[in-house]
Image (cartoon, rainbow, N blue to C red):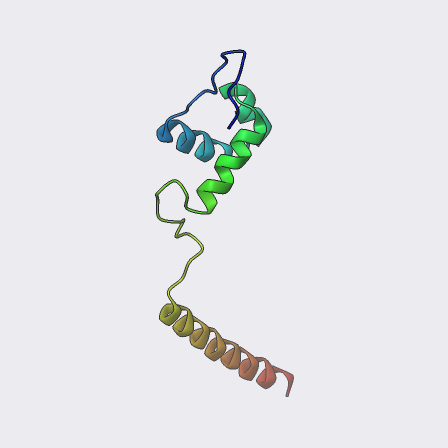
Length: 96
């Protein structure tokens, strides 16, 4: 990497700061741009942190909110299929 002649250093942010910035940016009423402006960072930097967070690069376990265990998903699918069958039988009885 080339040496900078201006002596200007790139700011280093703690992992805690990055995590809080990312979590703040995921709140529904906030945008990346507004959070970046509030924290005095470039929106592109915050976007990079958000991607790293999604990819699990902050040394954390990826978000579990959308993950469902396979066995649980199969059981839920079976229950839904049974319920659909029951509802179809009931609605068929009404039509007769």
